[in-house]
Length: 379
Image 1 (cartoon, rainbow, N blue to C red):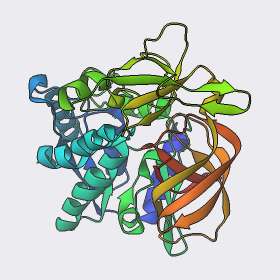
Image 2: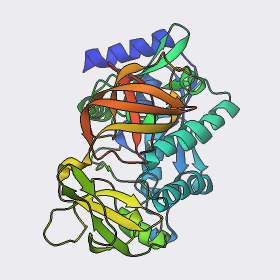
Image 3: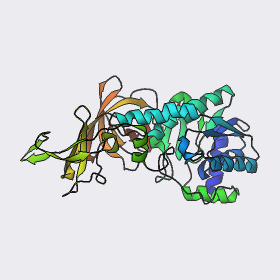
Image 4: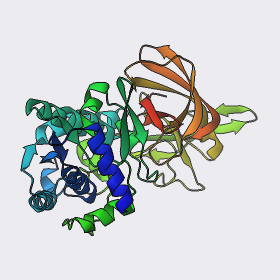
């Protein structure tokens, strides 16, 4: 631990002069608290900022990442580290840019990832602008990811702790943002970070981690029921006749769905059909029917199209290019070839079929440990 910590301190000092001003996004959790402590230890002029996000009025002060309790913890950590601490109220902006976007995408039958939008629009959008206005040299977060300056540009690499690596959520960042960003936890494992929290005597131990969407109190479907109007419609089974796959709205109706927004590709539980298991295969918004299948192999696909693609370098590489691709956060990267379709749309062809490619999710590209960029899965 001592060796790993000293290496991280040395790396920070080599890349940055001491006393540079850095704004740290502090959530009151272990990761961001240790990030602030590491930067303070490395000689930076650290300023802590806590961001208040939107929550449902019925939930009171509840929110997984910006509750009043989390704010108190963040303030206690700042006091312990003897650094200035400020609170930013981003409720309106968060509602508009993250929550409303999430609802819009769900209504369109997609499965969005609000964490990626939050990073782009809030942490590296609004907070980044705040740092610039305050003439800070850097912003920093508790993300598990590495950043390095190579030649005249900046690159993102997967974290030392591959189980905690969060590069998947940062594919929308650009060179201007990376130039002024620090990720102090990239060279640490989660276990090492917890041990550092003990070493620094930070009041954040024992806080349970959450993998859920921060602004949803119960579950996604209950939240969507309160926010979206959904129509009941037919569930249609895709059946096989030899090599043919048939979807017939008249002959293959086997039940009713409760609203297309409540289902996602590959879903098995919650369909409530006898004689299963059934898997969600697709949606038809115009006809308002949900397509299911009993054959799990129907979920496999070797191709997808990604829109709104961003390349971290700021420049499109020479195409076609062979890369590793993650189509959701908790999956392993798979080999694929990327080719251009038009504008910011790209076709990905996988070496092996991928299960449940889901429109609205992100496809993120890697080459070795480097994260090259990503885009939103269209189909």
